[in-house]
Structure formats: structure tokens, C-alpha cells
Amino acid sequence: MPDNQTIVDLLIRSYHGCDQPAKAVALITQHYPTIQDIAASPNCVIFARILAANNRISKAISVLHERIALKPDDINARKSMAVQLGRQGRVSEVEAILPAEPAAGNPALLSVLARAALHRDDASQCLAYAEMMGALQTSPEAAHRFRKSALRLQAELEAESNSSASDINVIAILGISFCGSTMLSSVLGALDGCENLSESHAITKYRRAARESGEFDFDNGKVEDLVPCSSCGSNCEVFDFEFRKALQADPTNRLLKICKHIGCKTVITADKTEIRVVDPLQRYKAVILFKTPYNAFCSFYKRQKRWLKSDTVEGSINAFLTVYKRAYSSFLNEHAPKEGRVFMHWDSFVTDQADHLEILCKELDLVFDKDVLTSRPDPQHTFGGNGPVRKAAKESEGTVKITRKAISTSEQDLFNRLADQDEDLQILYQQLMDQYRETFGRM
Image (cartoon, rainbow, N blue to C red; front, side, top):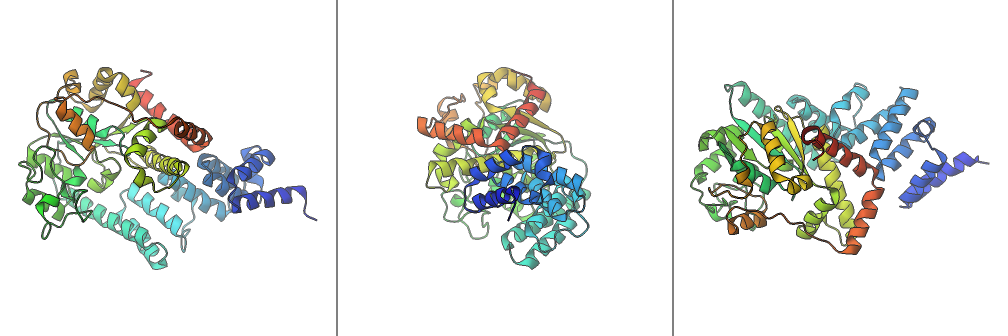
């Protein structure tokens, strides 16, 4: 006869397999009340996976860390921990816990290790992992993506070694869609000596209304299908067709070329999650812009329901929370801008714009001018970004009124319930706020 503990373990696995995660997690919590209790169980790795699958990745990592301390030879615990660290963007920690040949036949591990190689600018190692992934034929799209990133990094490293030192100052605004980046880049771009690009990766892409998507075909495409300049339209007087074509043909030192082309030493680009495509070597100072999860969801949900690809509100909320956690975990742990970073809480900026801008300018070595918050008369040759924000700025002669999109009471209640149950979200948001307060204090 199985003992009581064996029955409990079978119930946990059964609930998880039958898509009843709350019951599985509740049983783990009830019968294994401490991290040490879970780590000592023979089913530790399985329990860690269940916790991670139910928004408790941080707890799962703690469990696996304790397991490895108890049983250093438990290779399954090491592999599982590597995957969970990768999910939080903590790729720099991965290789230290794995043996020499840990990933053969394991696409999830290979993916994490490829990201770790990119993190330390090791193009050749990333390429090797990509080739291993390709040989498995289980994740061809991921293998292609890492191969492309490795070759791009390799080209950037070679270009940097053959170029002289530059004194340009790049301010990169990072975040998720609708985080406030269009407005902030417009404000910073109006400061003395600065130029705003908005989303510089869009300079060489098809506009959203075009039949095609992605990188523009400069040999066969129609100029009106290019992402238009916000001031000039498709035929930008500053970023002309031939310059954009040359930029796509050789994307290395992209931002340096742009600065030289427009004769500016400080450029503002709000490429958000696309920044590593623009500059794989991260030669910029980052402003990581974030909202409270609820306000971020309101902005995201009302404008881009189709992005969340769910027929239900609950599905959309869960999809959004995954996007939020993945992006900001990566910004916290995986991004390492050469010139440093500043975290700014958009909601706090909205309530006290002048004081926040003054502190931000000091951090970025920019000349503070509070008037740019309400008046930006000079045309900015920008690409991409939030169209309604740009339109509002033009209609009000530079002033941007910041509004939040409301959702229904039932939607709000559902969001709050799901967010309150998400331990990883709570931990992540607290980490973001701690980083924000290091610079701005408790404003």
C-alpha cells in the first residue's frame, strides 16, 4: 500500500495533469510548507515545474537552488533551474550551474545558453548553439532567430573593431508597447542638442497599412509603403530614400550613422524591446519605462486586443501578464547597457512631470528645460511610435494630455484577482519600483 505522502504526490501530479493548477499548488503548499521541504522531496523537480507554470518561478528557482545544495549531482535539477533562470532573463547565471555538455538534445536549454552567449557578446558560441538547435529540427524558427542574431552581433563586433571612438550620446527608451515611450522621446528630443527618432528600427520597415511586413524591399517596394516620417511623410527631407536603403544594406553602427547623417551628438530612440536589433552591443544609456501592471494592461488591452490572441478577457489578461513579466524581467536581468540605465515609473512621472524630468536630465547629462513638457514647436522627424499621441501633440501645439484608458468594473476586478495571485508579478513590480526609487526617491 502506498503511504500518505506518496498519495499526496500522486494527487499533486494528477491535478496538474488535469489542468487544475490551483489545487496542485495548494497541495504543495500544504504538505511541503518550506522551500527545504520541497527540495528534499524525490519529486522536487516536478513540483518546481508546477510552481513555475503557475506564476511562481521565483519560488521554483529557490526550491531548485536548495535541491542542488542538497544533491549537487542532480542533473535534472540543474537543467530545470537553468530553464527557469532563462525565463526570468537571468541568463548570466545559467552556465555556472550546468556541466560541460548539458544541453545536447534539449532545445529549451540550448535556447537559454544561446541567450547567455549573446549576453556576453560571444557570437561564435551563440552560433554554435544555434547550429545544435537546427540539427534537432524541433525548433527551426528559434534556431534561425539565434543564427541571425549571432551573425548580426559578429558583424557589429567587426565593425566596431575597425572604427574609431565616437562621442555620440544615445538615449534608448525601453519598455513594452504603450508604456509612454512616444511621449517621453518627444519631450527629450525637444531638449537642447537632442534629436528624437522615436522607433529607429522602423526607418527601414514597411508601414503597418502595407500588404507586406518587416524589412522594406528597397529594390522593388513602393516608397509610399515605407514607414512614413511623422513630419514629412514617405519622402522625408532628412531621412531620404537612398540613406534608408544604405542603412538597411549595412545596419552596423546604425545609430552612429544616423547621428552623423543628421549632424547630432545626442539622439533619442524609443525602440523598446527591439533595441538589441538596433544595437546588439548595447552602446547606449537606457531609460526603462514602466507603468503599474493595471495601467499598462488598460493601455494595451483597449488598443491591441488582437495582439493578445484570446477570445476571453481572462485569457487576454494572462497573455498580457506574460508579456509584461517577460519583457521587464529581461530588462532587469538580461540587458546590460554600456552607459548604464535608469528606471522610471510612468505613473509617477505623470503626476509630477517637471521634477521627474529634471532628475532624469541630470542622470542622462541633458540640459533641463521644463518648457518642453508643454511646447515642442520644432518638427521632429520620427518613425513609428504611438500615432494618437503624435496627433494629440500636433493638435495642441506641442502639449500632450496624458490619459488612461478605462476598462469595465468586471474587467478591473478580474485583472486585480489574477494579478494578486501572480507571485512572480508582485516580486517583479517591487524590483522595478526599488530600481525607480534608487534614482527618484519616493516622489
